[in-house]
Image 1 (tube, rainbow, N blue to C red):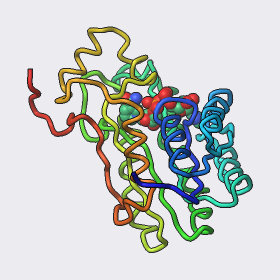
Image 2 (tube, rainbow, N blue to C red; image 1 turned 120 degrees about the vertical axis):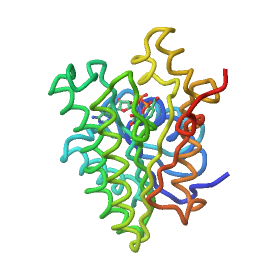
Image 3 (cartoon, helix red, strand yellow; image 1 turned 90 degrees about the horizontal axis):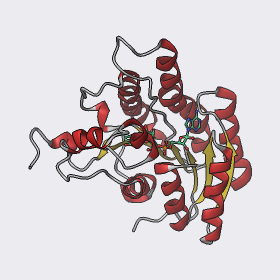
Image 4 (cartoon, rainbow, N blue to C red; image 1 turned 120 degrees about the horizontal axis):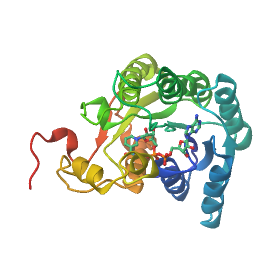
Length: 258
Ligand code: NAD
């Protein structure tokens, strides 16, 4: 198991799903974790779960789409734990009014872009100087399998935002490679978390999605946390600019088994 001993990690979206499971696993593997979320109660609950298990963590409320909040969360990591080694830009939304280019309201497009794409940009804008101060580090940006595949169940703003995350990740990786800063994208497949289950809110919709997954099941947030741990740790020391797909085979499939 890769370890994160002596590392300080900041995780956004840490009140729920992938972010919470990653916070728990990172702390279990020795990291001190700043749990960031717009949902302060949820972030504090994650911190209590970590502390109950004997780990070290602190909570920080931030809206990742706001520059002042992004700057403050990075400052909080350095003030609380002395440095920053791992930045996991994971917070994201999938809005129920996100649809096709014909019916997605403009404000939903803007909201989705601001959180999912600009949020990653702002995390990097303020996080990279902190990583430099600690001699380098690992950035993980959560994209999605939809950055690779189009779906007829449209969510045009979400899909475009995740494509942007992937493209931005590559460029960040190239620019900062000689500073010992690695930047990789995590591309989860469809997961059994709040975010997707709210969108696929009937058995029929869930079955329609499952048909495309060779493994025949939704992924678990815990399985993404394992992948994020690998990207965060020195075990992935020669990886940068990658699109780490953890998707039950969905992007490999043309036709799936019955
Ligand atoms: P989730 O809804 O369980 O967790 C997302 C967290 O982000 C929540 O705690 C929420 O409060 C927080 N958040 C939302 N807006 C925020 C903001 N402006 N500032 C700070 N925090 C904010 O969802 P999840 O499934 O754990 O998703 C995590 C990431 O994984 C997202 O980027 C999502 O797009 C991506 N993803 C999810 C799936 C899936 O099937 N669930 C698939 C691919 C990618």
